Amino acid sequence: MSRKPSVALAQHFAPLKDPRVERTKQHLLLDILVMAICAVICGADTWVEIEAFGQAKRKWLRRFLRLPNGIPSHDTFGRVFARLDPAQFQESFLAWVQAISELTQGQVVAVDGKTLRRSHDRTLGQSAIHMVSAWATANRLVLGQVKVDEKSNEIRAIPELLRVLELEGCIVTLDALGCQKDIAQTIVERGGDYVLAVKENQGQLYQDLKDLFAGYQEANFRDVPHAYHRTVNKGHGRIEIRQCWTLADSDSLAYLRQRHDWVDLRTLVRVIAERRLGTKTTRETRYYIASIENNARLALHAVRGHWGIENELHWVLDIAFREDEVPVLWGMRVGCARVMPHRTSPSCATSRSTYSSRKQQKSSVSRPNVSRPAGMRSICSRSS
Image (cartoon, rainbow, N blue to C red; front, side):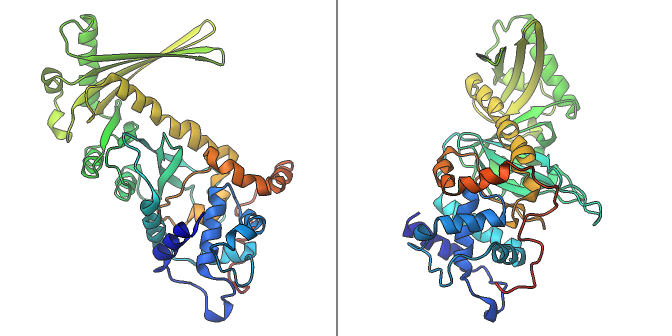
């Protein structure tokens, strides 16, 4: 990191109120924020690991941070982040990310919800945390996350997340739960396109799509304006064949009884996925509505890209990083939106090597079943 990004951080985090009293400010707030953000991007999961990152990178950090009293302790990191105003931190962090980010034209942004493993606390009567994430499939990073209110559901949380994202030129994909008219409207208003899965929860719409494609299939799509694309993938002893048909002509669109209820609806999509494993063959048919052009290759790319949020993010949250036990910088347990690159990018590998030995020592011993990371047990007793 050079001086230019650090100046940008100082600019965007300047409005963030320091929660500490004056006599306890042994470390600058900006120094704490920069070290924590850099450490988490490079793979730190706990306050102890954030401190270890700071110690390992002390010489490098001094190039752009003041560090008047050296590297803060893990307890200091925990106390400071526990006291920060989550809404203020979210606003400052989002402004910084937007300032340094570059738009990938045609990026597929997969939006989906996930109940976080081990996030409940029966003793305190706290139910499990349900989080909605926006996943950039090409760049393999989390663009944002919003906690679903206990008395609400994903349908209300998704528009809240979409409104803080830059979607110009992107394709947003959602599963059947997110196939809602208001959500489609929000995506279009933000400058993006949508590909929404349609299942039985959309009764008339699902039946119309099913009947329409079935009728055309009987005629083998003769004299029907359509696009078609097929992919075959082999690996791990299985063969996966995916076929995609798209329709965008006026007659096909007019067949839908709810056609005018969906903003910018341009294309109807059917995907048949066949999987062969030994002598066993399974087949699944899925239907979608989309605002993209009549391009079967693009539609199939978007549909397949959506599964990246399951294969590359959700399983990581459950198994590898124990999402509900990571620092407040990631968790923000009170429910603010989170915008942070996820730690699956290969670019972080070299930065992690400086303190990988400590992580390897930890990984050789099974982790105890604790409810919070080290450094979060006492947040008020010691000076920061």
